Image (cartoon, rainbow, N blue to C red; front, side):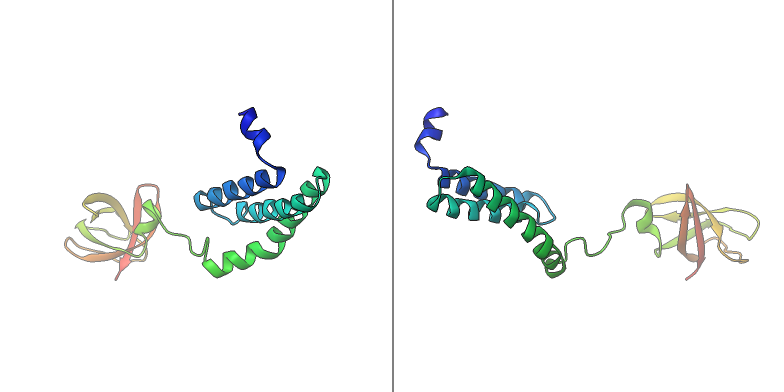
Length: 150
């Protein structure tokens, strides 16, 4: 490993760091590693002209921070990162239809079938639903679905 380090110029190490950070950006989200890669690339260019490591690191940090402050939000807006929350699991049930398998009244819970499974269900309003009716799921509390007419 020492041989490899001794054979590489400082500017080459900066460019290798920039390349590694670009690869890391592909596996991460949020456009942070991208700006550190750009900063490392700029530090590599500076290293060609000056051997002063303090200047190189300063250029890298300043360029990265400015890039994050000015460019990150633009890229997030442009590419739609974190655009919409995708409902999963129980939250994904809301708005979908279920079939009543045991009568639901305003005072008594019943049972509905959703996704091949039976769920305890209660009426949202003062309505009664009989077996075979199709209802819409409006809310989920624990293991109880709150349903209403479609």
